[in-house]
Image (cartoon, rainbow, N blue to C red; front, side):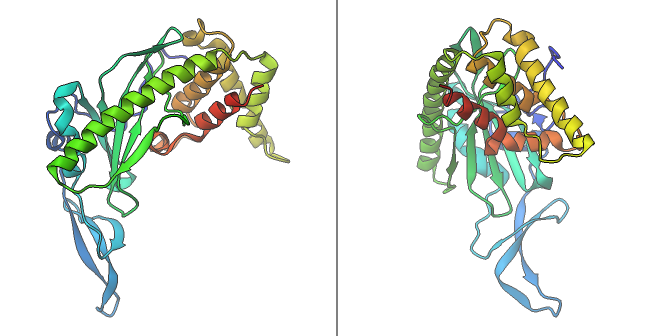
Amino acid sequence: MFDTKRLAPWDGVGMSVHGAFSSKEVMQRAGLDWSVSSRKLYLSDGSPIPGVKANVRSTDNKVLGIVGSDYKIVQNAEAFSFMDQVLGEGVTYETAGALKGGRRVWVLAHIPGEYKFVEDKADPYILFSTTHNGSGAIKVCLTPIRVVCMNTLNLAIKTATRSWSIVHKGLMDQKIANAKNTLIASKEYMGALCDEMVNLNEIKLTDTQVYDYVKKLILMPLDPSEVTRRNVSSKRTELMDRYELAPDLAHVDRSAYRFVNAVSDFATHSTPLRARSNYRGTRLLSILDGNTLIDTSYQMMKEVV
């Protein structure tokens, strides 16, 4: 359970692009340098379907999404090119990949800064994603990693924003502004996160409280089958073990900070009982969209009296 060689959430999902000098090079090294084009849609009688079109990948003609006729395609490299403007300021591209069969393309970048709290250290990363199915603009999500265990700590803090969307316009001035604003927002979030971690460490918990919170996080359904009962009990035990026995938490008080980290460890590294081949990709999506388990545990701790 407590493997010292833990993987980051994006390891095994994308390709390493460390050292790439541009978003174009990132796409080439990650095998994402294919283009997307739009094609009309037709009914079985050959008549065109008005108001919609298909986004198609160039390499295999795969349909990535059905979108409105006014949808503007943004190619992969162009979607992330705004971050090229700050590569000389300590920002480095790290990993890139595709999810959902190419419908969602993502890039991970490491940003400058060293952040310490409660005798721990967090490295700041940013996860960018774009879609080709019309489901949204370019999304930016801050993804701090607790270095000692590779857990994600992108909490939904009220005093700082952890994710936002960028509308692609292609203008150089706008690209520079987007890049600068991203770094500013990242610094603000990381500062707020450090403060919040210190506050959580001040909230002490009894073992009884912890187990009650575990039961609330991992619910047992009414009238469960024997298999369900066994599975839920197994997951509860695993989370308790991560709270009580994880070596990277040995120096941490029995506190809200320890509990949130244990939940993050569970959400980041636990193998699903019925692990599918794409479960790592699903886990990465939960970072982009906010991990419900981690967010819920954090809100629970904020309500401790």
